[in-house]
Image (cartoon, rainbow, N blue to C red; front, side, top):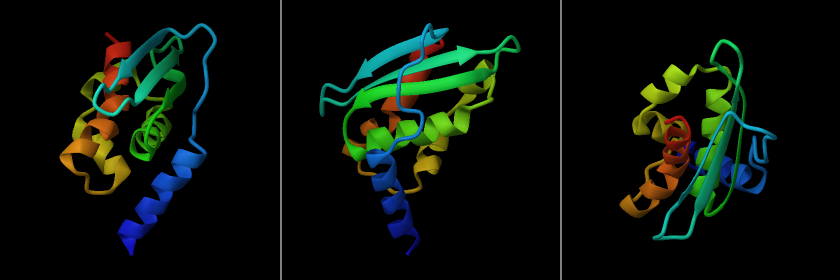
Length: 121
């Protein structure tokens, strides 16, 4: 039953992702591409004077897993510091998704994390 709820959440976030869009004049941004499936995610961040995330958005196209992962990740990161971003692990991202993934889908789920880490370098 719980797995079905998480699967439905992923479908819902794919159809209506949170934080999808563009930030005018972001402080940090990066675009990453998965050549194996064609998914792409562009992460954009605006920070406040305390070096915390004031606004975070993403643009991209891809499968339900990559879009849902980006949506959940951006929700989670609002108000977090840049230092917290650098400490973010793939295990945390997978925990946010809440489902078991095959090795092929793992790359899709972690693409938003890759964009996030690249944007803050």
